[in-house]
Length: 208
Image (cartoon, rainbow, N blue to C red; front, side, top):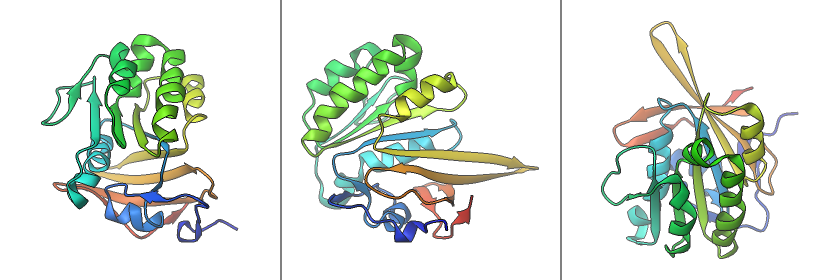
């Protein structure tokens, strides 16, 4: 039988907020502490909003200032750090903190190759998670060969795929939580909306 996401238990791991109330609820408190998180989706899926909500979660909660958003794909917003894809690793080494966003892993793969992206995840991401931090990578749909996507997904502790489907004049958006460290993966999709405030995750699930 499919496992309801409400029944998923993450063993021996503290949780950190995802920055999205509905997603925290569904995950029993958030992502496992010390996780490498990979979010994949199209540019219109709300993927950047999810990243920003994760980045700002500690600031919103208690005013903490140990979160970093490294961006190479577009113009940075206030507080983000612009870097080139080849500078990502060095930048991470020089930025002590607990919560990081890499926007995006796609730019690293395209300009430096998939091996460089895997090295970034394993070496720099591994150092961050060993100290209890969490790092979230963005990867865009329809940019990379399937074998490159599979290669980087293997190294993620948490993998979420954002799906947007067009039905006539409407766009239906669904979130697939496909991989969670030390947890059973539910066969469920979660509808969500993009609002001015960010991602609004429905508490109603749809069986895959």
